[in-house]
Image (cartoon, rainbow, N blue to C red):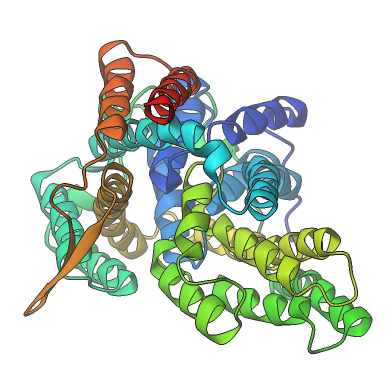
Length: 453
């Protein structure tokens, strides 16, 4: 095995950057990817645009939150295993703390009314951030009308025909491969110094971290990863018994972690059905409230499973104090949800890097990168639909499967805050955090006026 290279960025400096990223990870994967794009590619120039998109394309193929896995991958490229662990952990840490606190507020007060005013400002502001992300990622990844068409087709398939995400990605990969055979010039990776790829990186691709893949390394990482993944559930079984809520949640969410292709939305319906109808952790309708909390906290949306575990364990604590049980269950569920993400990246990254110059793989990933733009746009529409309207209805006509807002359910206050967010971001060029702060204040003010009226 070759000796791993030294850090290309001082670990302390990289840690500070990842901490800054972690505080801005609002807006689901679209907003999170946009934050990393802006800070790592455009501002700090630690990684080139094409390398960033290549990593994103690989992470999109994996189960789990692609933005968190992208942070882990880029952390590995910059600082090896330590960088991957720091980047991936910091990416989710603020969300874990925030959702833990909000889950406690929900349980203690019976609903989330205390934070409704804050949510009224944050959720609509995120729409503007997501729109900005779609534009930025699309501008970088859609370099030819063929790719624009592929992105549009992916968006239409997901939004109007409910085509499963893996099918969309597989089709895009095949389309990219066929395009590579017909027009190699379109799918061939471009030099990172091309003006169309944004500012040239300060660190060349060849200087980034790399490790030679080997069977010994793979077996070691796989064994260690599986042990760390399973250990807390095994301990819970020994301490609390196999029939405890902790073991049920550990096993269930471990399984959910490996089938979340396409992001959290693809698996939330299944989680909601099981949590309500099978395990009884939530009452009907509570999944929507948990989703509202998760959508307005930093970090991956799949963090909503922490809310499910918190509420479920609080109501079935066994011999423990309900609050202690809730915190244990929430942290256990977070652990089994995200440990696989680190395992997938640390296990696969060396192999993917070896294939980076493979023309066949490059062509396929070019197609997938174009489809990712459509996927992010689909998520943006979903988020806007459920933020700006109180109710939606599902249209099912032949092959068509899509949601439309219920007439008269438009939330005018949310629309006003969305317009404010768009004005600040696109017209004034404000930063994400500054925009979120102003919109949060505006939301609180509108909520107080509504309550007073």
